[in-house]
Image 1: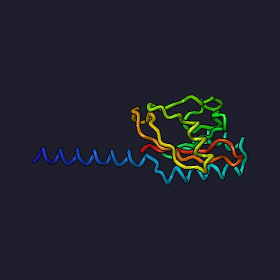
Image 2: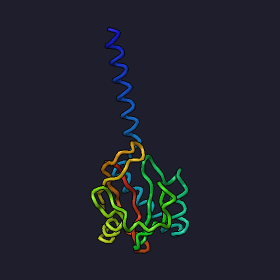
Image 3: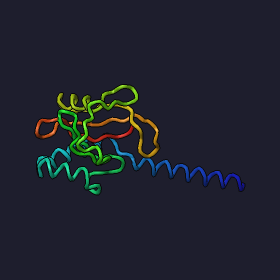
Image 4: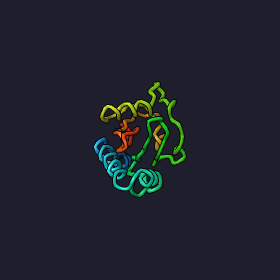
Length: 152
């Protein structure tokens, strides 16, 4: 009886931890909505202010494990809510473990009208390489893209 009670408590705690972890993950719908909100924010306040907001205003522009990233057509990072040190960096040659050329592929997808780009990327929580998808759309100025990603 004592073992059964301990097992039940351990199982309940495990399920609670998994559920809490899952709640910290963004969904595809949330990523798309956040991308659209970022696009609208650029139009409303202008590029300079929006890029600053996306990079520094974590309360508004970082949700769960999602953040806004913006690149121009030359693959130069304009804003990055997950890693501000990337702002101004040329990301042309960054590839995932499978050779997916991330930023140029995202720029191409945005130029086609927007959509999802799938790749593998290290998860900042688990530190393991996981499947990730980023929803991208062309910036209001017609350059590069604005996007938000989610782990799958």
